[in-house]
Image (cartoon, rainbow, N blue to C red; front, top):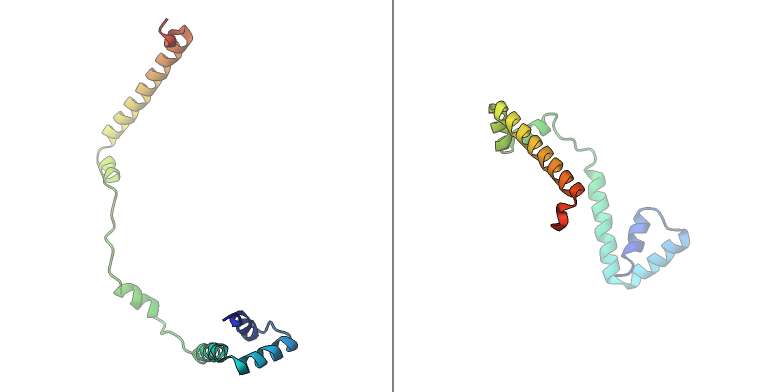
Length: 118
């Protein structure tokens, strides 16, 4: 159905008078496009007829309260680190000191030229 885009342009009001007349002529001879045209027209009429319907004021709260409650999951390491701050501080200190020691050792090793095994 190559005229589907034309039908949508028609309902969007994006066609010139000449294009509309060409579409009308096509619809007279093409039952598939005529059916699509009628479906789109009915859909638009349905949406327009339902535009005055409003949800109750407490609709959102009722829907949200009816949804299953999700347990708030805390990440295990966060929970553990809050319970043991001294151990976390010690681990950070050891990591920092070991990385500084390693950097210092590799810097001396690089400067001495010992990296080639000489």
